[in-house]
Image 1 (cartoon, rainbow, N blue to C red):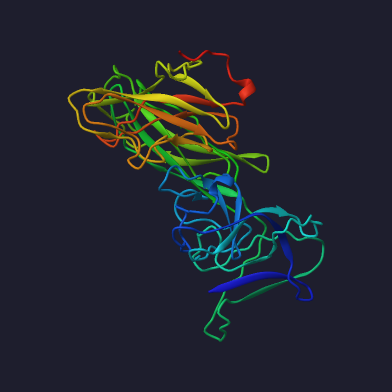
Image 2 (image 1 turned 90 degrees about the horizontal axis):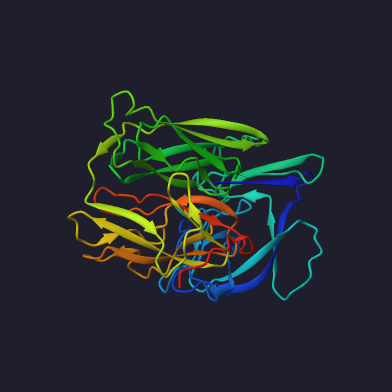
Length: 419
């Protein structure tokens, strides 16, 4: 179990960042293991925000999503899977009641104004790689504070040594890059409906920029809300393949012609990687259920319609809007579940489907519509994205996309709401 650190030429530790605590708290409800990225329940969580840094016994993490109701806690970056550490700190287990702090980072040597809370120093060292890709192996990103010679020290974290303990040490410049994988290939798309696909990025050497996803070569009668964007600092995005109600029959040649590519700007140069094909697309008959997102008569009204015919809505950071999901039932009268906290597929980072309770977003048996709410956190940045809903019935039918613009309040269109 390796531990790596960079020292000065005379063996002194090098400060990487100073973390000044601005709020103190503690873990409530239950402790945390070293992997958990969800349900961080924290005393006085209402005073904390997404993208705040949290310090706990040497580990630094970042809030990804706030609690969404009475039985939930913060989600931690990256939002899914094992949680990440910041500044190359290693995720650890934490007991119930352990003190924690919201911290702000400052460069070493900063003359900080005392506020009665502690200041923590993070050094240039790493135990287990902080983004959870290398198990118990170490990886450290080091920027030299000045010209000179530095010492790399590699040891076993337990203090063990001997001829049977072997390590391989690599030292190299950063090589930022990415790889995108596709899920949902080979979709069977029903006429007049949509089927979801998902792209997930693996980011290398701290590359955190946006990644554009392009889909080309779709058969006649099929469209998609591309290009998609995996937002800066995020790992995934979701899109849909739509089939027109009158889409023509597929041929062996055009059914498998759709290609997916991913492009990002790295050090000022556009880098493109092939993701692969969407596989063989199949056309099915009209399903027993069609899902649509629309305005409620007493809710927010669209500001317009996209060239594809999809309604466009606006939301401002700090605002909650109400929309409606409507079902066209064609012989299917059972309950329709549309997911939990992640039910708003491909919403901009910092926005989420709110007020879903313990049962998630669902339409009861025999009902054909239900209102739902989207909240934009104060940290939500201006952007435009196409989002959709996916029902966990009838082969996971997705709705047609809806365009959501995140804009500052002063830039919202002057479109009156319905009475």
